[in-house]
Image 1: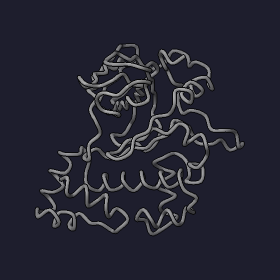
Image 2: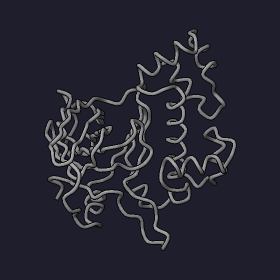
Image 3: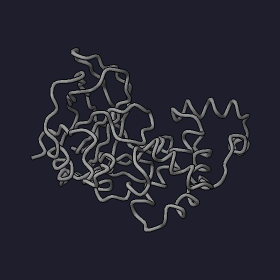
Image 4: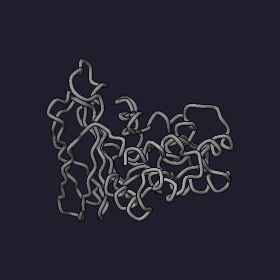
Length: 270
């Protein structure tokens, strides 16, 4: 599976087929799909799409390439098809994705690239909207760090998708933390994917252990009843589908600045 993932990362801009990937690792397409999903949590097709969208987002935020050039460089042949898929899955157009607020509030992790917004950006994000009224359910997330990990700034998001492309339905964070519990309010009812990303290198003086850790789990939230889930953080792996989401929402028709998709609940960041 590692060899297959390496092939995807090396050739994501090509028209890769399931049969071609399976033949490269000498197994049948059916067996390949089954063991790939077991190793990564998603199908080969969804993993490839995650890689392509991750690279497209990276290029939109870090280069001046035209959308047309980016479309070709990440394996799509039609600008219209790419733009429609991007808008449907990300919640904004490729052009809107280049707004400064998107990059400032970017959360990203892959085996080779990790990023968490600065505490200043998160504080400003949390202050741009008034506190929401009581709503939804309360989710307690039990964060468990690796034994050798240094304190970290941690962001936890609640998502509708196991490989999210757009912002969370709710999120919260904690600064300079080791293993701890974090409570997120106003989580809608339902079963959600909860993802935590922790930047250990951002805490002054942090040297020992991994620089960045992640974790995910499913959580079922019921309104007016407390729910909980445990996340055991670990360093990113090649088998993790790459994720890049922004906490900024789509720009309004009136041309106002983007605002956070949800209000942050950050503890001990002042």
